[in-house]
Length: 252
Length: 252
DNA sequence: GTCAATTTGTACGTATGTATC
DNA sequence: AGATACATACGTACAAATTGA
Image (cartoon, rainbow over all chains, first blue to last red; front, side, top):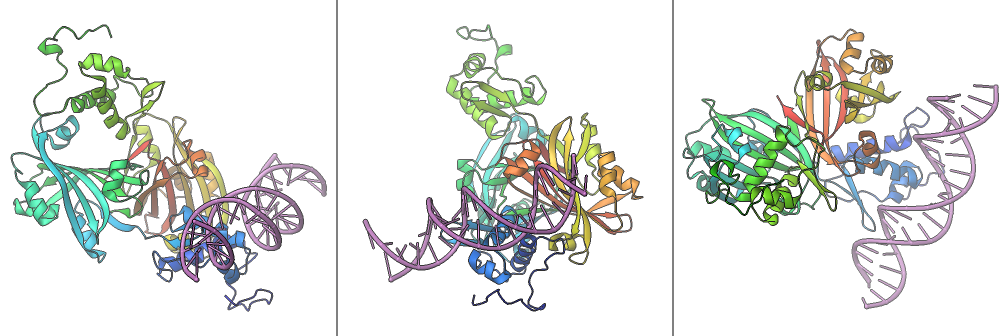
């Protein structure tokens, strides 16, 4: 950071175009966002200090701060007093459509996918689940609590219900195979599709925060969906909670 | 609330089925959720006190509290110490797909839709907008800040960019017509579809909270989308912020 | 544990261009 | 044209948090 800014920079060195209607702080934010986007500023790494950036761009520190505030608002960076400003992990693009599979999505991102079975039990369906699965209220279902990780980072947790007696023992298959798709295959269901999907958002409760390894109150995406097999039978009702800090849904 | 519970209720009055594996608090929660769902407990109204409910269902007040906690977690009710527990406004189902129109969605729900133009200006496209619209960085675009209401309740606010010179004067048309669809029709675009849609979630900033009339920090759904006209030209890049308390996205 | 250096957070003040009334 | 409000940009000083010697 030995640059001075008392000598006018040559056009090729000029990082900012002044007086063209685009505010300096916007140009700085765009430049940094682009560098984050192409990995020049790696996820998790510290970006140069405000003082260094004000030197690099030849602006006052406040102008840099305005740009960093815009990036923080978009979730690209996070500043910590006394430490510095750091690049946030980019949310994993998570395609969601009639045939999306968690395991395939994560593998395609070059990460290893696994689903943990946290708990399971058999219970009579509550009103909502019964309606989703087209069962009589009180009909027996398997309930599984699961957590889904990509390279050890929890991305989502879900409550899944499946009708009995058809899927008796499903939880054991899931625990062994770590994937809904593979467990369904084990039960002779080679194809399944989404019948309906609803998406909402809310803050994480204390318990959910522990399951997802996020701070309580952090934003979650709630995805409520029903899956059907090749014959159109409703086979799975799931409420998934995604950490909105780590996942972005891509609609197809 | 004149019932007493010192006399065993007859089977037809029995509200809870004990000893069948479904916890009492779940049955109470299901019952109340169902009453909220069909409007017996109207949105915004106060539900009976915990003491009254414990009398009605013949259970201890703690059991009622467990049920209410489950409803609060799902966002159906909100309890305020010293005041009571109130039914939250049900989120409006908002279908989102290649051809969804805000105005049609809201009209179908029996509410009146209108979009307010909060601000607009012409500016050079920032990096992200330029890429979304397939323009050279710095190409001129119209930027509109809008807010979308159903019966005076703000549901979403959006930042929309359109390429110039094609859509010069669009903001005036929008301000007059209160709808993107109608404003596009005014510019000879009778059909448009979504090219891509990304969905995330985060907390509302102070400014966003004011625009949406929610408390700062309340959850927002962020929907980033690009629209194309009948010829496949990119005509609109929009970042919408939905109040997650008021809207639930339905994927099609 | 203490202290100093580093870094971000906050609060003043000033000046200028632009859009709006 | 003039007045007013607002966003932008720069300057300075100090507070608060973190780190490492």
